[in-house]
Structure formats: C-alpha cells, structure tokens
Image (cartoon, rainbow, N blue to C red):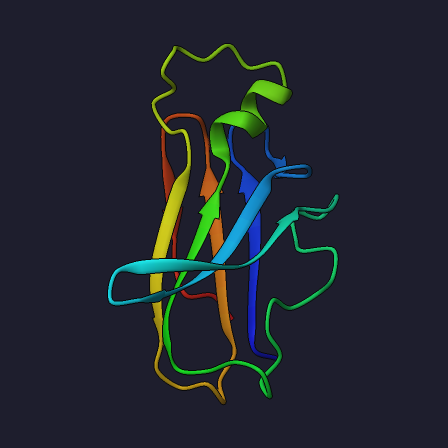
Length: 117
C-alpha cells in the first residue's frame, strides 16, 4: 500500500477536510517538495496513497500540515501568531515493502501522531 496519511480534527470531532498538506523528501536536512494536496471530506489525500509500494523508497520524509489555516477557515479565533501554524512530521521509511500510514490528530493547541496500519 505504500505511504498514506489521514488527519482528524479532534476539536470538532471530524476529518480535517480542506487542510493543506505538503509531502517532501528530506536529504541531509534539506526538504524537497514532492507534492502538495488538500484533504478530502474523509481527511485523506483525494488521489489515494501518497506512494504505492513500487514507488516508495527508503529514506527520510516530511509531511507538513497547515493547521492554523485550516482552523481559521473553520472560523476558530486564533492568536497572532498562532500557537501551531504548520505541523511538520519528519519520519523515516526503513522498509519500502511495508505500508506506512501517518495519521495526525490535531487541535489549534496540540497534536499527536503514530505509525498507523
């Protein structure tokens, strides 16, 4: 299945539809953008997996989630600057033949992640 992500808005108890996300590869600390997308109604990439198993390579990756813009668009009053503007998750792919699912659960004030299934 490759690499996938899913975002849940735990403030409102729903998928984070409309949140902007950027996928990058990271080499020697420098990020190179692979793609940018906007989450669908289910809080997922509308095009499906970010990489399939044939395309996924071992290495370092970054998912950048535009948390503040999402919550502002939902009408949440945030301070300037917002506490969480963009959440960057840096993670490694050690076994490109396995599925890596990277979920994000977030509010304007907190987030958590894990390697999902």
